[in-house]
Length: 437
Image (cartoon, rainbow, N blue to C red; front, side, top):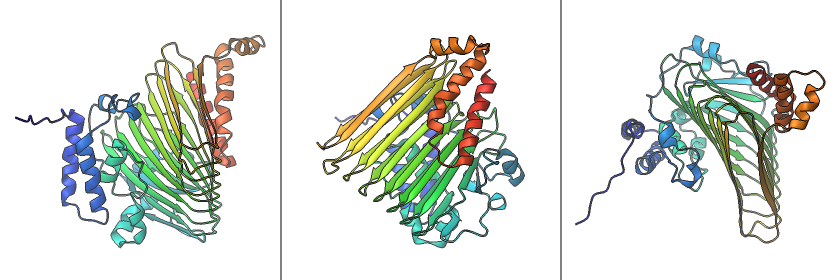
């Protein structure tokens, strides 16, 4: 006699599966992709501590409730909420509650070689570029990505033609607008042609005191000999849950630089997957996270070197105050064919609170023999001698601590190439430190 064993589903999983059941009647260009993602989630559910990639971020426990999908946002409210990086000169595209808001977005007078549309319009028009959605596969089950793939209906589709140089950054403003908890799912696609350059910016924000949920995913197809900078600022409500996934397919002789800055959300997880498929490319994944109270923030990245002669650099800085918890998981895989690979990864944490916690798990998986690879992780408090030096010169304790913390995260922020963005991120760090003081 064989027992019928069924997994016990949490209330959040049950509500999400019920939401996914409604997809069976949806018939659009991404219908098959959505159904496959839905079946994957129904089979695997939310990740828990027994899943190695999620052992420090038990989403099944942390995500106690699944809120309904957010409705259409009011234009005036979305405009009032979208405040981040307004001082930076950029082309702004506003995505409120997971849908592009045309009234607040700048689609006019596009630079030569730049195509910019909403995902909903691309799907409705039957454009072939929609076939690229879901084309970059992480190689392992990712619950956040599966939910996004199944439930996202809109987002931004950005294409840069070969040889085009887009000087003004494109800023995608993600904002939650509403008075009750709800969930938003936005899916974006960025395709950068051969020899092109682009600075792509994403920001995330929402109202305080509302336990909304954000699940965002962006796929980047980075062509040969391109230069792509990606800057992300996450400053969600202290009650929110933020899940985001970035997937990169990197071509030959490419320069790819990303920077993630996070100060918000009760629970946050950012997953970055990069596949180096072209020789002689250089990528840099950098980030800074500032945490307080009981915030939980997880930065997980996976870099797959498939071809020879590529470089990868990762530098992540985390500051933890009060009872916050930070997580860094980084894995570099070097395939047998990827000789002459140079991969280096570093995570550094500064602990300000006695009850704060930092979990580091750097990994190297190397199948080639002619490589230079290394990883490291440090975790400690503010240097007492440096603190004494500043206080001996009449600087108050909190101000002295702020100066040292600013210098600590400044090393990571200085990797941002765009002057305006770099200054804006420094101002964000200063604002966080000022509030703490």
